[in-house]
Amino acid sequence: MIRIHLERTFKVGPELLWELVVDPDHYRFWTETFSKGSEFKGDWTKGSPIRFVVEDKDGKESGMLSEIAESQWPEFISIRHVGMVMNGVNDYDSPLARGWSPAFENYRFIPKEDGTCIFEVEQDVPEEQAEEFKGNWEKSFDLMAIRLENSGSVGKVITLREKSRNRPEVIWEKLVTPENIMSWNYASDDWHCPNAENNLVIGGEFHYEMAAKDGSESFDFWGTYTEIEAAKRLYFELGDGRKVRINLFEKPYGCLIEERFEAEQLNNLHLQRQGWQNILKNLAR
Image (tube, rainbow, N blue to C red; front, side, top):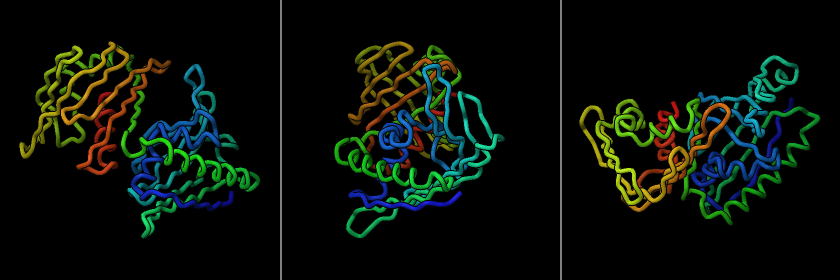
């Protein structure tokens, strides 16, 4: 193994560049130079397992088994590769897998005074593949620049995905039944959802009481339904006008839950992504 080093300056700050890297919609776009259809399964918080894979038509994954060794928003991400997955089978012990264990892939987001940001990549790769990886990274940098220029959604729409062993019908019942909603609808252990009301019709409203367990804070999280298809999709508009779309996809392992929501201005993008992701994880479980 040798460590390669590349960097490119982009015309955005580190917060938006971070979103470009970790949002699954954008990630799929800029990583296609490495593997078309590539995606990640997991999240980017320190200590989290994460899989960088391509999924075939039968839902079997092939790619890298990894973990997030460090995550310091919006400055630094370190990925530790620990094995491989081939045709859905985890591999930690073959010569090929051991050759990538451990191997690190580090991203630094370095702000500049003019409002731009340097994206710096360090990656451990087999020496004989170093030039190939460098070429792929340069092409990925080009795709990143295109995405930032043309997408219009970077930092405005946040996409989240979670796998669940439950079938879509089970997730749907958890998603729309008030007593079930109260069991998963919280972002941290010191919060809960003590009340939920749901009028599941187009134009109907939902109201969820989001409250700190110590009673120090609470608010009404509410919205109006715009599109409903049982066990497939649930779209709504929040009280502040932001749009949210939840889609359920049946998979051999159970269900993939995909959620897209328009970001708000009060809290930073990282905090919003973390909070909504934690709630989605509760739903998936």
